[in-house]
Structure formats: structure tokens, C-alpha cells
Amino acid sequence: MGNQSIKLTVDAVVFGYEEGVISVLLIKRKYNPFKGKWAIPGGFVLNEESLEQAVERELEEETGVKINYLEQLYTFGKPNRDPRERIVSVAYFGLIRPNAFKIFASTDAEEVAWFNINELPELSFDHSDILEIAIERLKNKITYEPIGFELLDKKFPFSDLEKLYTTLLGRDVDRRNFRKKILGLNVLDELDEKVSKGSGRPANLFQFNKKRYFELKNAGIIFEI
Amino acid sequence: MGNQSIKLTVDAVVFGYEEGVISVLLIKRKYNPFKGKWAIPGGFVLNEESLEQAVERELEEETGVKINYLEQLYTFGKPNRDPRERIVSVAYFGLIRPNAFKIFASTDAEEVAWFNINELPELSFDHSDILEIAIERLKNKITYEPIGFELLDKKFPFSDLEKLYTTLLGRDVDRRNFRKKILGLNVLDELDEKVSKGSGRPANLFQFNKKRYFELKNAGIIFEI
DNA sequence: GCAAAAGTGTTACAATTACACCCATGT
DNA sequence: ACATGGGTGTAATTGTAACACTTTTGC
Image (cartoon, rainbow over all chains, first blue to last red; front, side, top):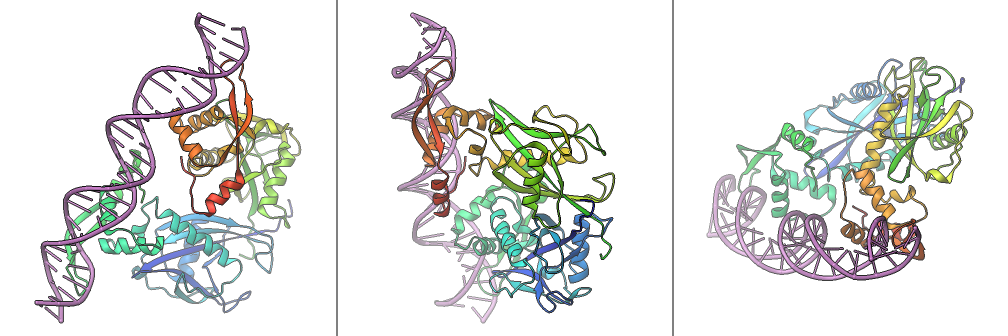
């Protein structure tokens, strides 16, 4: 143990959503191993920084994205997951609105892009495993915590929320029941603004009230779809 | 990053249950730092072993326990969580029947003992934080996965299960409704054996049918209390 | 005036909760 | 015979699921 030689990295699986499509942010690796292949952004943890600092730093360096929803996902440590040497990686799980940032590649990334999670390229290392677990977490978590709002614009029409849920759950939901249930949770503020999608009746905009959500949560009321 | 000097450990938070008391397995440290203080069992990951192998090995070395329910809990990586140097620890969460093993201290452990989770000693490092998160996980997880059976004898009277749940949930449950619900899940086999607790009518014994549980789970039926 | 999306209530059904008495054994 | 824990059913309430028509806008 005195001569332990294991290195530690962090990886950030960042999801975005737009118009019925869930995407994940990937980089094309500039260096070997897996040079030219797509990978989850991430990199080595520096000696003095926390894991969260490391993952936020690496994400911003490689992709230009500053994230505000980020949680730990899982730690991957199989001995040969990296062909060079023993590397253990702490994977994180993040959510952003894709249109909130212009992404750009730098440092270890030759390119950055959003990929539809149903049309993924071949990935480096064990990154397919990581992504699979992250997708599962996203699909589960949206049913018991209000994380979907991190993927939508601050102000959104109800139909956007509904579409996000049908996309993630992979099934239709009854429009009336869904609306009743969500509004019944009392965490959305209805605004005096409308938005038109070109055709059809303009929709009212709603906004997630995070403060109220935490008040209710602390009072023991749970969010559940 | 070429000169990264972070060490990696694993820790095992192992819970047991007996007669209305949830306990956790702790060791008294034989060496500095925190010599003589209680801690969660664990230690350094060796270069060629997986994280799971490491945690099982350390647990057995220090306490004599071979565990069969073990899952990853969380990774703790604040820069100064260890006073000596930078150490990141992957914590695991385990369950056993305390009477299934005779525990004994060795290697880095001067002593091993079970502690009631409501009467914990002062702990080393950030182990109180780890334990707190583990307890939360246990209390949550028992409501949506059938992990409680890992804490009971293979054959148990229904009242043992009920008491485990009231202990973990911190509230009474209606005896009839609880029984209906659990039996309705169809994962318990009722045996032709009875056990007497000294006074009162002897109770029928039940056994968790793991095979049936996984069949039902794969068929999309979920366990929920 | 018609196409397209938004908005809205009621009824049937399923699940959950509340609740109290008899049974089998040991002393 | 009494103390102790085990075993059981029904009715009220609540929550969930199914279902179709009207409204507002753009063209």
C-alpha cells in the first residue's frame, strides 16, 4: 500500500434536452489512447482540489460548459479499464440547457458535440458502461425528483414538460392527468406570459419555484410522478 | 497530472440487525492517525485488485466478516479528509446477519465491535459523514428493494420482519396491512415450521424467495412498501 | 373556416387506510 | 384461567386512470 500507484480521474456525463431529444455532451480525444475517438469529458484530479472542483474544471476546460446541476454518479475501478495504467474514475452526472452555452473544444478535446442518446458513436475506455448507468439514473430520477426543470428553459409551456417526460419515460402520459398531478405538487408558478409555437393556441408559460419545492420537501412532501 | 499523488482507499459500512436494534460494525484503529479511535473498516486498494475485491479483502482482514450483500455507496474526496495526505475513499454499504459470523480483530484493527447506530462513539476522519449517508441509504432503500431479508435469519417469523421495518422507518405499521402488502408481493414462501418465542402462540416461519423476486422484477413488478 | 395545439371535469376502478376480535401456546 | 404474541376480513377513504369536447390562435 505504501507503493500504491493508482491514478484518479473524474468524468462528467452531461445531458441536455431539446425538442424531444435527449443528448449527451461528448468530446473527441486529441491524444492517445483512443485518439480521435469520442469520450465522456473528464480528466485527472489535481492534488489540492476536491472531486467536484476537478470535474467542473475539466468540463469547462474541455467543452466550455459551466454546469450548475451536478451530482456524483458512480466510481469505476476495474483494474484494466484504462489500457495504460490503473486509473479509477469518479463519474458525475450533470444537466444543462444546451442552448445556454456555446460549446467549444480545447485542451485534450479536438472536438465537442451533443449526441442523441439513441445514436451514440463508439466510445473510449468503459465509457459506454458509464453512460448506460447515467441514462438509467436520469430516467429513474426524473420520477422522484424535480430535475427535469434543469433541462428546460426557465420559462416553459406545459407541453414542453410533458414532452420531456414522455421522451424520458418512453411512453405517453395522459395530458390531463399529468397536468393535474404536476400542478397539484404546487411547485410551478403560472406566469402572465404566453408563447406561440407558430400554429395553434398560444400556451401559458410556467416557472419552477425551487424555493417552494424545498419548503415542501422539508415539510415532508415528496415529488413523485 | 503526471505527478498526481492521491491514494485510494475503500471503506465498508456494514449493518446488522437484532431484536429491534440496527448496528454497524466498527474497528478500533491500531495505528496513527486516530490510534485507539473507532473507524469504519477499510484500507488501501492494491494495484491489481478491483474496488470490490479490495473492500471484501479489507473487511475480512480487519473483522473476520465475509459479506454477501455489498454495494457502492459514495466516494469521498475532500482534500483534507485525511490529516496525513490526500486520500480518496470509495465507501461501500453492506448488510449481514450479525450472528452468522464471529468477528475478530486483526491487521490494522485492535478491536472490532457492533455499535447501535443510535449510540455511536466518536469516529475517525470523516467517518461520521460516511455513516450518516449510509444510514440514510439503508432507511430509504428498504422501502423500494427487498434488502431487509439480508438482515434477518433465512427463516424468520413475520413479526421479525415487521419489527425491522418499524425500527428502520421509525414509526409503527399496521400489522394486518403490512402482512397483506408483503404477502401480496409474492416473494415469501410460508414454511411448515413454527417457532415459539417463549410465550404466546408460535409463529409460522417464512423465507424470502430470491429467485421469484428476480423473476417478478424482470417482469416489471416492483417491490415497494 | 379550418388546422393545430392548449385547456379543462367527471366517472370508474384500484389502492390504501383504519379498525377489533379470536387463536394457540406456556405458565 | 390468564398472559402473551400470532393470525385474520371488511368497510371507508383516497388516489389513480380513463376518457372527449371546447378554446384560441395563425393561415
